[in-house]
Amino acid sequence: MLLREIQFPCVENPPSCFLTFSDVWTHLSCNPSDGSTFMSKNRLGWEKWEIIVQDHNTGHSLIKHKASSRLLSADSDGNIYTQEAKDGTVADSSALWIIQENIVRSVAHSNLNLGAINTRGDLTPKVSPDNKNHAIVEYITGELCFFSSPDHDRRMSCGPMGKMSMSPNWKGWEVFRIIDVGDGSRHVRITSWTHDTKVLCHADQGRVFTSNNEFGMQSKWVIEQPDGDSKGVAVKSAHFGSYLSYNGESFVMEDSIDKCTLWDISSAHQQKYYLSSVCHDKRIGYDNSKDSIYCSGKRNEWEAWQINSEGDGLVSFKSCVDGGKYLICTNGGKLKASHELNREALWQLEYSPNGGIFIISRNHDWHLSCNGQGLETSLNKGIGQTWILEPIMPSTISMDQITMYSSIGAATVALSVAMPFAIMGIIGGMGFTAGGISAGAGMMSAEAIASGGGVAAGGTVAVLQSIGASGLGAAGFAGAMGAGGVIGASGGRLATAVMGKSEEQKNEGTSSSNTNMAYCNWRHWE
Image (cartoon, rainbow, N blue to C red; front, side, top):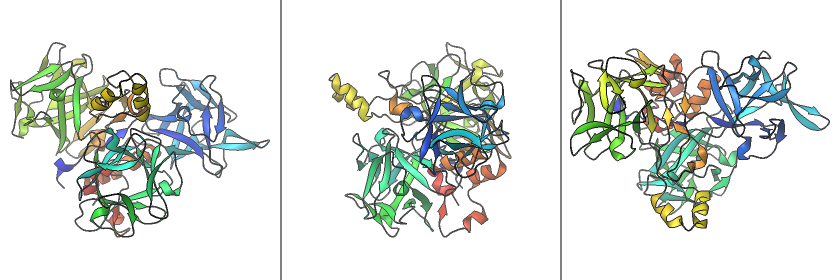
């Protein structure tokens, strides 16, 4: 395996979901004004929930209502209610849940299911031993990716009206999210990142289209890698068994795999990040005119870095400026830039108790440090040496934003600028050893704020889950949560993430299909 080809996936965090009772196709909802719970057949934005892991060893999690920030809870009789969050934690187990195989179970009630009982013809949410009418987690966030056709050098795109096309661009309309269906199968859904209600679907006559919030069989896909030296993966209909194809003019479904049915899946942030100081809001940059490393309060091309895996838990930072050089640290602790990828260009990332990471020279043990005025190196481990990695997402604009700008006569300007922004992602913990990588805890995130002050892409937050889980995608993330462990922490999942599938997995079928590994790392599934 070529380690430098491994991509760090871009996964939305914390995961958002609907709590769905599939037998009756209703969802658990919450009234944002008074916190009361009820059953709904709608799929509105304020009916979404977030899952926040509290203990990665036990799998205990909070389920927070996104619109009100209230926590889903069960009283001593098993009745469901919500309570106000207190600094993100609660004093007892009433608001703690375990998610196993996408089923929600109450910690306070010995892991009984979150279910629903029939009360005078109406369904009432309640903790119940009933294994039939129980809530399942229906994820609506996942891994953010580009789908490129190697044969046409174009990417799938979902334009402002939700219409599918192919585009030469690498912008927000070309970013899609891959969501684990969570039914125990390999099925996924593919939705637009910018227009997040648009779901990729297919019809029995081979028609390919997008539909608003469609969650039937026509929206389920299987992503698999054909046998042999392939230039991409195949996107197969889970219902009809046919393959998504682009013939140069339109999207169609084909019965067999050929060059038109192959797709190269790559991460949406293209491995680009800002390296930001936690306490000083400064970013590390490279000035190619002066050939110098500096610290700045800006977020421009000169402050952007590409992160590459170099093996043994080490990474390199390469400037995104044309002819960019690697960030290196000399024996005396001086920071420079070099075209040569040598030992001085290797860095180790460690968890910082200050809510970020330490970036440490592997060769000399110097820590990157920011004193508020400039960039330096230090042997200390404090707040001044703590950094966060901000994935740089492509520019985008949604239909709602186009409508808003049109109303003030600014649509042309908005479309040309396309509201560039960077999604903030804090890696809360990472540790690296020669024997393997352990993912950390304490994931944090911030809203993606567009340059005009609006929240882009529906306020979803994309974050690199961790370098330690560099192989783990949306399906693996769901599985890791269900298993009660942080992503990549268990040996089996880590081995799959970093080294590919086991022999047993390889023998399960004639083609490889992702189980835990990121979709952007499809080249390393075997």
